[in-house]
Length: 98
Image (tube, rainbow, N blue to C red; front, top):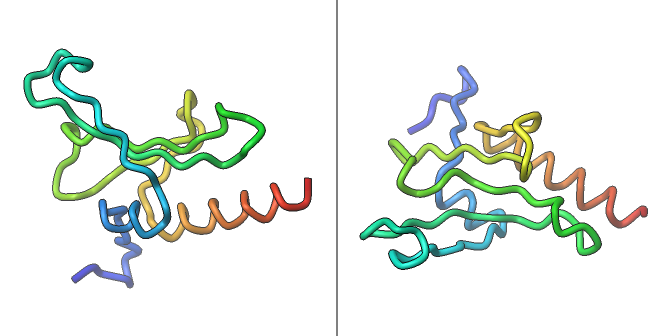
């Protein structure tokens, strides 16, 4: 059970699935790794294909603790599921206004 008092609300694979992230599988042929790997992505805009949240690759995950970043930048990195959820909600609201 997670310690809510200390803010330990890591992002799990189940959290990514519940938030609507899409699983992208990279097979052995494409990755050059005999086992392949996968990651998750979440498009934030229909008009800008680069405005996407992406997770770490599955082969980098330890203890089911995922890190999510805004594509092609390290400026927006999420390790807390509530922060990630709130960011997605804010972006959905913003996209509806525009």
